[in-house]
Image (cartoon, rainbow, N blue to C red; front, side, top):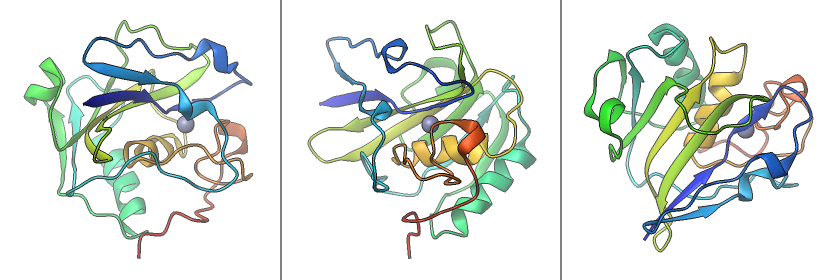
Amino acid sequence: MCARIIISSLMLLFGSAAADTTDGTDKEIAEAVGFSLSRTPSKIAEWPKQPTVVVCKGAPTSADAVGSAVSWWRSLGYRFWTVIPDSIHYGCLMGEPEGNILIRLIDNRDINPNNLATTYIYYNKASGEILWAEILLREEPRERVLEHEIGHALGWLHYSRRNHIMHPEWIKTGWETTGLRNY
Ligand SMILES: [Zn+2]
């Protein structure tokens, strides 16, 4: 059983949780737990293997910027296969690319305009394993947005600590990594 969850956002303004909902289908169970603000760093699911990061053609960011954000997570002990730039990967066209983190321009999905970016992760509810993830960007990401969204793609939820990379409000994020180290 596959569950889809929106765990991103990184709100530019003080957004309302009610504006962020998921639309479930028969195959997917929608949850909106990402907007609960945990007091300890917590993860919703785990990658069973190293993901590949695919920068879809037309995404408003560069492979260099994505590579830098991936390196930042690598330095915390996370493993990735590689970053594929400017891609017309099948996942960018049709979705459901197991094993990949896609980064793409936001499409016509109904997403809170207060959010700088939105991440979906698709995971197996029974095993807790992430199948794939999708980071939707509205514009060229400002500082820390890619790192924050990749954090979601790795399964991390929001964390209320000020200056932490996973804080949900961009203005209150920082480079703090409390609880995130993977070694
Ligand atoms: Zn977020």
